[in-house]
Structures are given as C-alpha cells and as structure tokens.
Amino acid sequence: MDDSGEGDAEIRKEADFDEEDQVNGDSGNETISPSAWNGKLSLGKVVGIAAGSAVAGIIVLVLLLLIIRKRRKIAAQTKTRDLQTAPTSNDITSTTTDNFSQGIPSYPSSKIDHERGMTSTYFGAHVFSYDELEQATNNFHPSKELGDGGYGTVYYDGRPIVVKRLYKNSLKHVEQFITEIEILTKLQHQNLVTLYGCTSRHSRELLLVYEYIPNGTMVDHLHGRNLNSGLLCWPVRLSIAVKIAEAPAFLHTSDVIHRYVKTNNILLENNFRVKVADFGLSRLFPTDVTHVSTAPQGTPGYVDPEYYQCYKLTDKSDVFSFGVVLIELISSLEAVDTNRHMHDINFATMAVNKIQNQALSELVDQSLGFERDYAVRSMVTSVAELAFRCLQDREIRLSMQEVVQVLKGI
Image 1 (cartoon, rainbow, N blue to C red):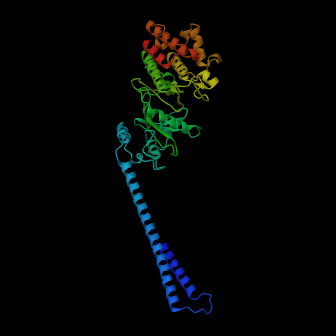
Image 2 (tube, rainbow, N blue to C red):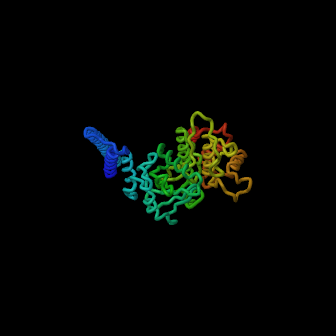
Image 3 (cartoon, one colour):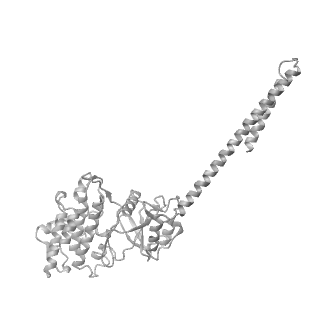
C-alpha cells in the first residue's frame, strides 16, 4: 500500500512537472493568450485525473488479488487439517496396531513424521518416528540386542515387538528397506512374519518394526542356545518343514521370489508355528519371463549354484535353498561349516553324495529315532529323497507348490 501511494505521488508530481514545462517552456518571450492558457489548464487537469484513476485502478486490482490469495491459503490450510484429523482406513489399522500389545503406546508423533513432514503411512505401513523407536530400544543399547542378521541388528525390550536397525554400510539398504515394506504390506500369510511399521525412508536411520516371535529361530534349536531342549522331535520337524514350504509357495503365486530362505530366517512360535522373515533381498518375478538377471545375493551354502554361475534368478532358486533347509532338518548339521572335511564343506554336495550312495544313516540326526523306529525311518527317507530332488539341476526340480504337496503326503 505504501509503495502504491508513492507511485501515485510520483505520477502526480510528474504530471505537475509536465504542466510547468508547458507554461515555462523554451519559447522565450512567446505570449500566451488567456483562452490558450485556459485550454492548457484544462488539458493538464484531464491528464492528471486520468493518471490518478489508472493508479487507483491498479491499487484496487492489487488489493483484490491479495484478498483472493489469502482466502485460497486459508482454504488450503483448512483442507489439510481436515485430512489429518478425518478418520481413515489407516486410523482403523493403527487402532489394531496400538492394541496388538500393551507395550506399544499410542504415540502422537506416530501420526506425522516431523523430520520430513511425511504422512502416517508408508506403502500402507504405520510410520513411527525415529525418536520413539530410539527410546524403545534404550538408544539401541547392546543389552537390547536380540540378534544380528545379514543386513541389520534386531532389538527387543520385553514388549511383543522387535526393531530391526538396518546397517548403514549396506550399499543397498534403502532398496532393501523399501522392498521389505512393500512386500509385507501387500502380502499377508500365516507363515510370513507381520510388519507393524517403519520409520520414514528419510529418517536419520532406517528402522523396521515386526511382531516378536518368542521361540527363536531354527538355528537356535538345531545348532544354538536351544540345542538340547529335546523339543524338535521328528513329527515337529516334519510339521515345520510343511509350514516353511508353504511360505515361498505362497510368495511364488504372488510373483515374488524370497531369495533368502535359510534356517536363520525361519522364526518359531511357542507352538512351533513358523514365521518366515527377512524379505530385503526378495524380488518381483513377472509371469511373462523365464528368469531375472541379477547379481547373486544370499548366504553361501543356500544359494542356487546355477543362479550363482549364470546370474539367472528363478523361482527354482528358492526350491534349492529349501532343499538345503530340509537337509538341515533331518541332519541337525550346519549348512555352512568350514570345520568339516574339505569334500563336505559344500553341504548340498555332501548330502547328495550320501543319499546317492545309500549312506543316509551317516547324514541323519540319530536322536530322531531313525535306526529304531520304522515309521520315522520311512518318513525321513522320503524327506531326504524330496531334498535330493530339490537340489538337482534347475530343469528337473519340483516347484514349491509340488514340494508342499509331497510333504503333506509324507
């Protein structure tokens, strides 16, 4: 408004200056008649009035534009508040998330990621702030560590959730973070771990929040802290094998390859129900292609050798990895053990050789009753034969759906 007023003054001053020039021009002693003088005054008044009207019009126009802009800004702010406070499908799911345990309070900061102004969901996953998860893990204190995976450390603080902190030195940690969220928010299955939420991908660190599975991993029971529990009898192991197989079979029907099937990623509930975890390496597998060309990733001992050699990933790569898991279930041996004889370090090759040479008894965990119980011996032999078929060349391997059917038949 002040600028407009100054412009008006300048225009008026300029108009006055023009009139003065007309009166005291360079015409020397030229005499002006009264009638001509009156005409010049009238012309000056007209020019002044016109200029003043133009300036006034401009000022009115500017005021109108400012009023319209302000009203639009107020309307946009009102709409944003309405969207943030209106009940949505996420509010319904977040109610379930808040109630899945008494351990997760309803944090106000969960609604908006204040670090970057992100909304309360990411690919449909509930977004937690970094600060609240940092607090939940006591600043990621070592005493809260539940275990280490290939791509992150898992923390547990007594509540039925775990927080996975992705390693910063992983070159593809952002891609793995997004992949895991996208898959677990779209695909739900009784044998897949449940994802409760995550931080924003713009957070200072990438964190994933999962359900807590209390009975550890298969590794804990086969080779680790629960080794001597005596709970993994043969019927339990066979049941576990069926449930593990159902997870990648379900993924394959949804055009997803897990690519990381191994005993360390198989979680066990107290009733030994299975939850397959760790989907950071998983890949979408379009139905109109025979393979996906990608650099081999995974744990040595579980990686399909044809995938490793030819860089061609298919759903049969998961079948090979599952075959290795089956051998672990019947042998209680580690898939990767450099202390074995050099000819037996390659676990799959060792198992195939023993099965081919009718030396299965040298491979089987004798605590399962293989020698003394005919029914157990028959079932273990059938599972070993199935594992043998899973470890063959890709062209003659079964599909995961066929593997499930064979296991259920056993």
